[in-house]
Length: 450
Image 1 (cartoon, rainbow, N blue to C red):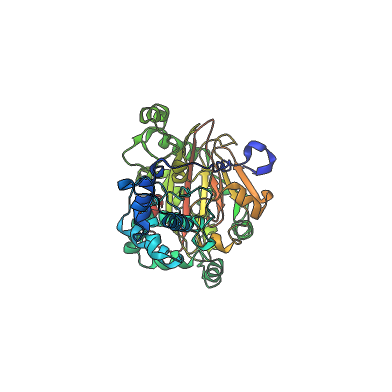
Image 2: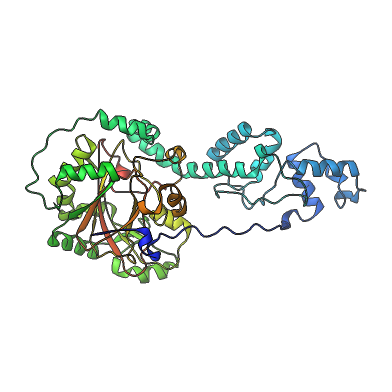
């Protein structure tokens, strides 16, 4: 197995975000006429009478003073194109609270709230009147866009959060507190690891002793050198070839991996990943790897507690030439992220196909499991761009992991990591995660957080 730093080859670098388009001044056709403009502004400020604007109903003569009031009010408010008013009860409560708490004119901003689009991660900011001064910083649409993005991230996850909470009420405490590094260190300090039987019956081999693997994991968050026997790796690969997988986690899109290209073309949409979910229970080889004594011994030494299997996943990463941001986020590819599935956890990965820089290698940021900015510990967003990670950690700490079928590695998922999009061949990978708490049903087979 080869661990390369990202700067070794230019094409090893994970793709960064495309440059944002330069904003251009434009007039929104919805508000191009004075009548429509006045109608919109009357909703924001009911005390303003639309008949006093030129070109409005009854063609009343222009009132200079009223027009000045209109333009002065336009300085404080930006209006976005109302493509859809898709406000659910949860959106309404969350967003109204944010607006009423953080803006200086809560009642007048309520109209701005309803005219904005929901869950888009930002807003189209177009001034009502060209040439007017920008609004004050406290009422800037840029600050509002941050809270819109926050609400858009929370809203689709609420059903998942509620399901996990109903199944295990202690999950909520972990979700709130386990994101802070001092709390995680305290959990390690007060943990008690029980002795386990030897690993002489293990099917997994390692070139390092268990205590040294645990030491490297504490230092870097990553350790390579694991290996599956050729027979076990080929058996799991054969199981993957003959068993239908689910495209992009959608249980209605089941297909054989060999039919990926035709199935993707029939749907006219990109399919980046194919997960087996509960079908992994049909493979006895996966069950042997999941309960392997060597893996459990490494997990016990690193977690300083009795290890519990909390997740097992087997999935394909398929080559793709075109894809959208939503599909990338669902597949957890090309965007650095960290997992927080337990107070502390450890993942083992095994490549079941040969993986090089064109086959979607796994990428990890060394040491990021024990050093994060406060804003990253508090974030609810899934992805961080490669440029943002490189600025904080340095390019030398970003490593790409390549290897042959059967090669494996261990990592702390609280560190920043990502999968990369395969470009030449498909990649099949097995993941086994150990934690210290009983798993939820959703996490056990790797259903996405959304």
